[in-house]
Figure 1: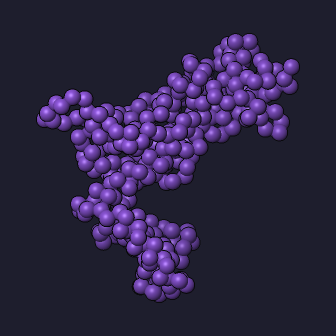
Figure 2: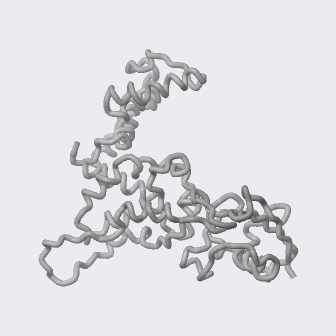
Figure 3: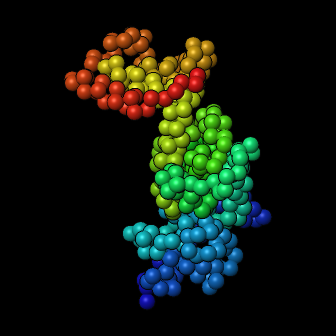
Length: 333
């Protein structure tokens, strides 16, 4: 028989509890090969019938059982409990993050689905296109959306998204992965409109590159890479009039000057206008200075006064030149 384990569950009943609390369940797992969901089912069926959670297919297809395990979002049906045991034979299970808790491990996913709907995740074909049989996609075209098509909408990535945790206007990794799938679908007729919308505040440029979504995703979606792909496509098509694109281009331009990233200049290049700098960045800079987060030095803003060129600067220049030549975007500012 398997050794006894302890599963520590965060419980909450809005009808009786003012706040959530931890409850430990110690038992022998059904078998050595039991999944974590099997163990949670064992608690529900044989120990405490009041434990509430979602589950269905038990095969990593439906996406119902996304939870936080030992602090990270994932499905509980597609890994064995042994993979999660700590040194004390304990596993912690919590409801998914970034969503209100309904009861115990059940969350209200309304916000998640609102983000999905916000990107219009369906094909908008050209109504004026003359019918010439089926609108087929080549294997090469489909390869651009193959990974995004594997998403099962479990919300594990959304649960762990640090950008959404800070700013609720952010669309989130699942919605942006779905958007990438539609943008690259050759049957869709509104690619430009979609990229313009996704370039706005709360869209693809507000991702913080923390990789939490990639780690949480149970499928080969790799949401962060779908977001990067959207940025590359927007850049190629010339959607530059936004802070995110200006930030990326400013980064390259600054490095091209001396081989160093001058972080004093980057915010100025990102905002796009003196007005935005004065109203948005300058007050924040003053607050950072008061908190001793940095020591302001106006001389840093002058070219060549902060960083001398790095050795072998010509090699960096060649790399940047090749990168720009490969992109060759059409400017739509």
